[in-house]
Image 1 (cartoon, rainbow, N blue to C red):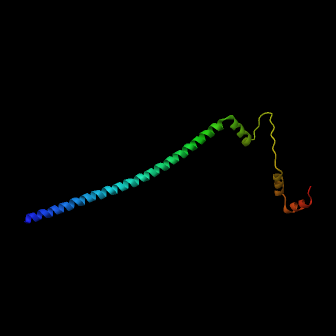
Image 2: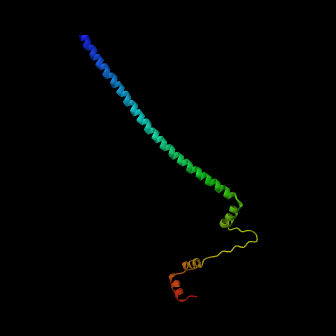
Length: 124
């Protein structure tokens, strides 16, 4: 009878131990799966951000190549020489038109307040 009781106790202990191990394995697998999914989501977000950055840089590269091609053209070189370096073609005359407002403001800047006051009464 004692051996029978010992067998029952051993059987119960082994059953409880077996289920405990199974539960621990399931908990371990669930937590590992959760960590993997979280890391996967982070990597997907990082990949998407890098792809957006790649597209932006490719567009910038395309624009720079277009500007390089445009800068090499004769029309662009001629326009840059005219506007930035104030150059002209042989036989060509350059006419500069200055606005009257600029002339008046430039003239008034050098005058004192008394000269401005006098100029109100004595317009030429």
